[in-house]
Length: 572
Ligand code: TPP
Image 1 (cartoon, rainbow, N blue to C red):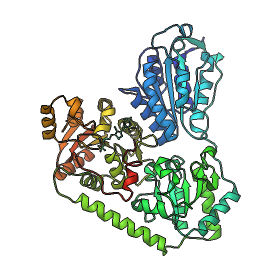
Image 2 (image 1 turned 180 degrees about the horizontal axis):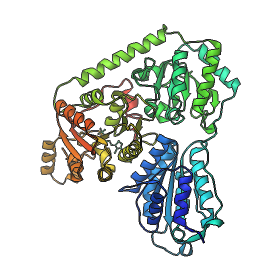
Image 3 (image 1 turned 90 degrees about the horizontal axis):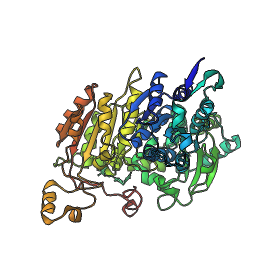
Image 4 (image 1 turned 30 degrees about the horizontal axis):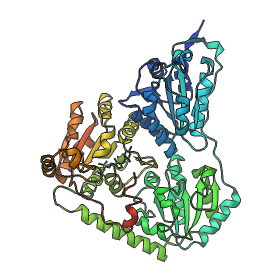
């Protein structure tokens, strides 16, 4: 009699559904699930906190289009993973969380680590279920995977009763469930596409905004043709960066404020008019702007600003429809317009300001100097993971992306602590490729602290991630070592130390060396260049550059300073 355990059924079902990566922390009752997953050919990465494990699994979902699995124990294990589920759901990234839970005969009896897990996950996901028997495991997992990638992608949860893990069932009694195909591709109505073209043709100051929905849809090839043939300027959202290269001649990211404010027509491709795009409203947008909204989610249409034209469908497929229409019509937005020259002037003026700050030779370094040198050394195909406040914001403007899905950051939810999990996921995927690309993780010192122990995970699996901690001794800003000592003399630090401050000159590099990775303490541009160069040539082990910068270093003056205080700087 051929029998199969619950753990094997879970593992085989995941494999059938093309779930190739699992991140988690084992314990009762799911240790056998992780072992069965490995036996089924799924790569298992043991992490140090379920939150980071869930961030990692969701990053796999975004990068590959197939969800990663996050395996957690019951109660506190699952609770830790909720942060990752919420982050994935906000980002619209697929992830499948599998939680062990109490035995069926102990439910509500005060069992070990008992918690109402299915109910708890509902707010954080699109789908939650607890298979009622071993026989239903394959179909529940198929539905979970399908739901995570169909429609608007997001998080899903499957609860596994502890006693089902090692229970057995005859294989013949389990109905085979085949792999769910990639999501069906939907197209916009052809009437709406024609209308979009006529609105674009009538525009004086048009703008294309490329969101991470375009990256997820793999729209890069058709989008490049569309942008080049239509002659329209574009700017990316943070994770839309790289769908088209940041150095593309039509990219006006460096003139972002002006482009948003003066555009009369915006073609919005897989981006939401939420806080990241200032809700599409004045004073950051023209009050009369016409939005041509392209999204695969009907409920997104008209959020905050009414869509002048709503193109419901897959971003890549809809851009293909628009391109066909543009070609048939023979229309192209002229390259010699007042709009183009206003944008180009602003792009070069802004580049000059950043360059002047970057070339300052004073020590300690400022953010701009650090990013200037990093940007000169990074390979074009590297994956940039980034989080922090100034570190992330300034880094985004100075570190170019040239390839799609090559930037992973705090995202729509503004979550600190995602960086190391994302970097581990990206590196795990890269190691399977014939020509792996480097993963560079640029962290604020506060951001690094949230999941810092994942450095051990990187060292354990020998993932050649390069972490750069931009260390200003605090959250947004900090104080220097002398001031800290003076404050300590004044009395209890919990009363006198600014809440933003962290330990001055903390040796984050030694966290990396503690586990056998390479650590560098960096104070000057020369040290930064030497260390980064060395790490880029060494693929053997992870590295961490602890870059000490001026604790009072800040962003350059913003045009909308009064708004930045509300929208940009206190983002999170
Ligand atoms: N907790 C979470 C989970 N997410 C958040 N966004 C915050 C707290 C609030 N917050 C926003 S940015 C930030 C924090 C704690 C850290 C900024 O400091 P750092 O990472 O050192 O970057 P810096 O701006 O100093 O370069």
